[in-house]
Picture 1: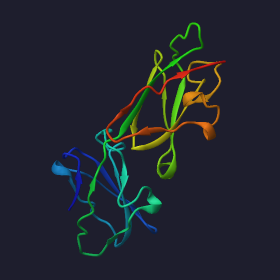
Picture 2 (picture 1 turned 60 degrees about the horizontal axis):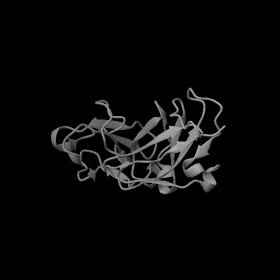
Picture 3 (picture 1 turned 135 degrees about the vertical axis):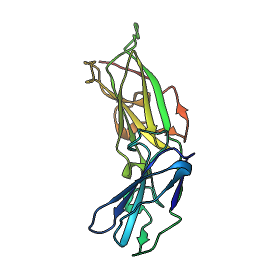
Picture 4 (picture 1 turned 45 degrees about the horizontal axis):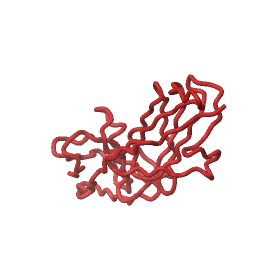
Length: 197
């Protein structure tokens, strides 16, 4: 029996075999306990996934046991006829980025249909792909972001057209973009953009 400490709400716990074989899967029960059964002996990496859980996304960041990504996760050895205990995690709450997008002055009208992408940097970049949304009535919200730094990109093509791509604080490339820091369980506000043609 293993524990996922997040107030007993359901979280998917997936095991991935480090060599050939089928992965196992379990969902946490009351109190956060889970048991992945039917595993063949071997070495596994364990992934806790509240975002892809069969009970719907929960406000916690996915996590690999003992590492930031599958390649750096701590292997767990499963032996025949024995229970491997103590593969526990405390899941961090995910974060959110919000902002407003407007067109050029003098009107500075709110823009609907701007694509907004947050791409993780550093160690997080190896574990996660970008998160994507579309502005509605000038505002947007990027959710389910693990704590870390992100480059936020604004482009046409999600309903609006004719605007040049840019990164936060008017950068014209990822190399000059200012990273946005997301803390666990927080909302990072004011990541705004003024689009130009």
